[in-house]
Image 1: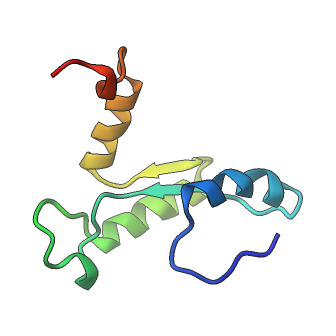
Image 2: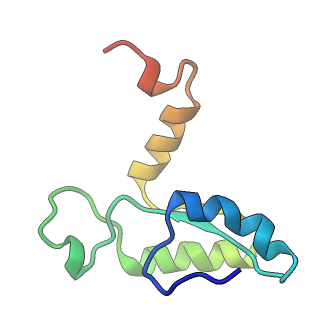
Length: 93
């Protein structure tokens, strides 16, 4: 499987990667962060996670057997909300 060079991979691309890359011995780890404290996010208000913290968490995931990294509190809250019963997006305000 050949992927064009780009900075990120969309969700549709990601779903094809684990199966297609398994035979090559390639490991896929999903990394989720709301905003990383970089020049690109400088003018966006709200909490941001330090790039060094994202890198630390990713290295831990590589060393372990994690398939997913939720790099900041926002992403952890999103995951909890999606796993709630009923899911947070189905709850009445």
